[in-house]
Length: 379
View 1 (cartoon, rainbow, N blue to C red):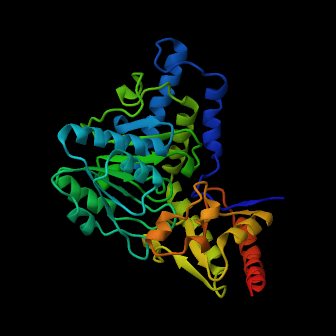
View 2 (cartoon, one colour):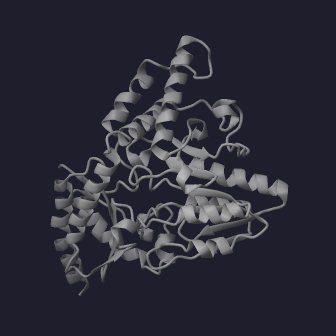
């Protein structure tokens, strides 16, 4: 059966250009990038090329790009590094929001109990003025997202960056959900730190990056080696980094990012059309300018999401749900809870670089009958 993969917001399939770039570093080029022999120099050049490619896509200088194993590691490096600095200064207060990724929230909670958590409106958006007002003289870190990973709502990250940095706080922006889907500029956002990842834009698993503003020095999360200019120890995953760079380079070429975003928005509206008349509620910002173009999150009235998700899977369609039963943590999505939404009735459809109209049509053809059948069973 040809399946329709509509869960790109969780992870996106590897782009052909990334695979092609990676293959030589999985077969022929195996040298340690830290060595001076020819094998080492070949892999070092590949990493530095990828650093330039990633930096070019996200508006960062190459030397501001610190490679690691994932977006989660990048987030942890930002949070733990900022709080280690704060501990030395006697400043341990953190401002964050209720809709951040668990990598942010769990890392912050592990290090300090002095946390101000900013709520969100019904679209899942925090208020930058409220967040800025929460910054105190002892605030060491403000950590916010650029776009929400569950409902796609874009956040006022640039506004809070400017306000918080004026008050002496380090600002971290989690851009993992946004990069590769909307234009992102580290320089324009104006934060001190920004976390990004490869796998959500088709660059493959096993690579992420923390963008670190020039002049800012933080204690590394991973120690034991001099890699990444002493900013992240451990032998680099050369193939994954090269794939990351190749995917970024493709997105930065000939308006590819804009074209993919426009195609994604069309497919999302095609999927949304199937919801009309089904008795569902769409979550997140309904204005296209206020959300990621590739994400559609909605709730189905009167039917829990898990049986719909499983029925769609039997029809060859992969989607996601924020319900407790669909999570490895067995807890409902805290994002939807913060929005006042019943997560157990939520479904998320997300498209990507290789999604076709036929994929979405498989979803739109299957969903109405599935919902009708489950409602009849409940009745």
